[in-house]
Image 1: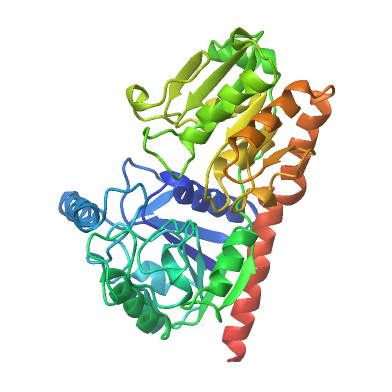
Image 2: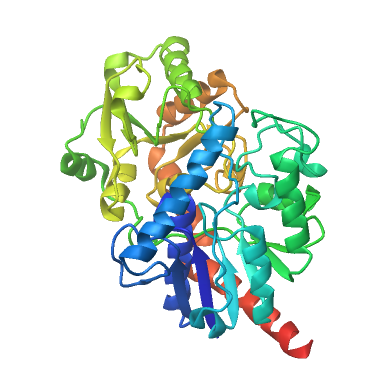
Length: 424
């Protein structure tokens, strides 16, 4: 069978990395699997570029820019992404898609597939699988919902928009999605139980066939390295207790919980009588280290790391990975850290409890409690047998998230859909 994966980007962002990893895992199991993207930042022979040529690339880039500008123009100044599906493309006539047995959608925003373009795929008469990497597919436009429950009905009166109302942009987008989805025989993959529960509650897709299959990663790359050696290679202190966290876009960032991280470190020092000189924070993925909080301990910024082998060394070098996200589906950083044998301290939210078992391979703190997150850091800091804790972290990934396990779960889904399609 031939599977075509569709994503806006290749390797950019959590969804881009997740679909590339799945594509590679499927190919390792002998599946004819192809990843096609709408915009390719740099040449990649393993990815099919749907915007080939100078004109096509610039036209696609213009659409991406225009969509993001529209979001800024009509959304409030809040750190919650919102997509206006104004620009996109009809790809239903592409030879590549006609050759597929199954079309597998991933993250298709930023001027790639509008609701109408997704509906157009029904003309191909092929099973369609869609992995939800965030909440956008079943909302009126937002990608992160927090405590908003408007997706349970028909959206409208959106708290993100500058001009909310009963028939605002979020409601009109919801109606476009409702009309488009009614033409499709969708099969949804939810990477986390939290995402699965959210979809089942939604007014748009609550009755659609759904299966919970996690993301995967390359366990031959993301693997434990000897901690001292990893630190020496990265030029990090070999004596201190190292905290690690990733991607801090700004002081105002809400989605990744930067303010809670800062407060948790302060409380860890204060409540547990820890010398600030004995610990250090390592941050990777930051785009602008001038625009991050002033942490109460020595902090090393490693910048954006695009090389997975170096990233794996970073996780191995740390004593604990901190994930203070306030809403996350199945964050790659948590999975990567565990694969490298480094325990995780995180809030109990989203899909994180699918990966972190409390006081087994990490610590699940009470949601939005900086004090409990600090207690989690302290629990790992004081753990007498960290080697066993590290082993539990690695075993979690090997037993539940390895490439072979996740690829075979997808293969089982694909086969069942093809069998239904043939008998229909």
